[in-house]
Length: 181
Image (cartoon, rainbow, N blue to C red):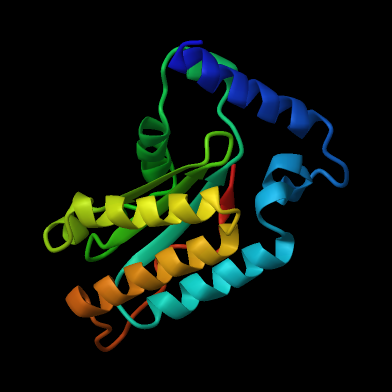
């Protein structure tokens, strides 16, 4: 089986799980999302992001996507390409000091991508972000979903405190609530 076929089947399976979701029409009805994170987990992650941002001038944005449309998977769209699209769509680049960081999760593939704005890249390279993303991925392999995300947020917090400490007024420029696609 080719890698592309395997990815396609992962997203098709996720689509089938979604179609059997129970409950209201809100984003938490997705069976695949509930497998990883509860509504309470999402609230806690929101609080962690808000607390993190109070300690530095960076802005964190968590985006969670259950699956990609099958045609996009078949045509070769990767989690990284989708993360770049979400970075733009969620306007993570639109902060005063260019200090936005996107934490993107593609649950169907258990892929985690961290992308940052140019202000971050001047002091923190993509290698550091990839290392944190890999640590989160390792936690996902052990079914420690919220814990690995919390650890990743904490690592980002420590790096951002070092390079972008909070000074004076520190407005919240991006929503703290996880964005569910």
